[in-house]
Length: 87
Image (cartoon, rainbow, N blue to C red):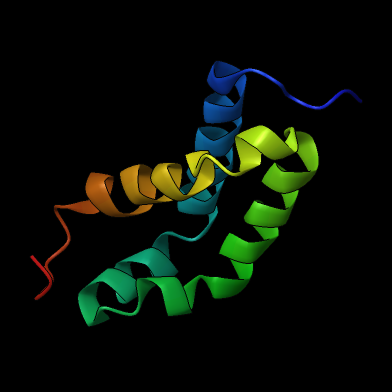
């Protein structure tokens, strides 16, 4: 399989991976946001997703933080309705 070499495709892949994390780990995400331990709660899943993303995109695109931005957008920003002391 050819590596993804366009920013748009890399962004879509990153968001798809982050969406899957959100879909399959709702309880961990809720707990992590409530207790301000989100990235500790999902450390294994996030790193698994990061490895998948890295294996599918060109090195130049991997270094542009698409995956990290997708995590913030989907795992944090979209969960603003969850009660937490961090906001």
